[in-house]
Image 1 (cartoon, one colour):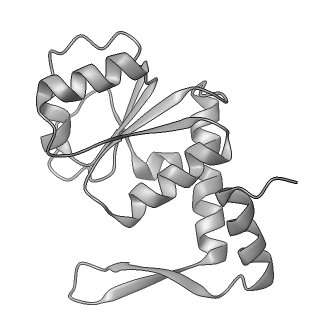
Image 2: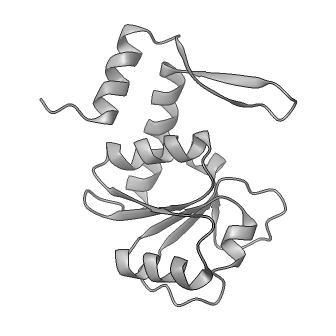
Length: 151
């Protein structure tokens, strides 16, 4: 059997499901921990949502975000279904983002927040079918999904 990142995470969860392996800011000056079991549950929910949206092995899913734990979880969810993660630097220009999305033919864009998403309004992105916002605070209503709806 091939050793992939999703397989290694599942193996780690089987051996020590309650082991805290990811720590991220809780917004109150401290940190919250995610266990391997919680990571498996989240990545499985995210990958199930992507599959329900028609993402299949070999399809491309773009992530336009700063480094954050949700980026890593979404990357694992994408890998879990055999799709390809297309990373886009948040410092990329609008033109660069549009080029990467079009050239990769990404079906789904996972954007950090409304600021990242707003840069792409009006761009011609024919392959793009779904948009997910990691941080939906202050985002106007629109044809996007929140990370919470994927759970």
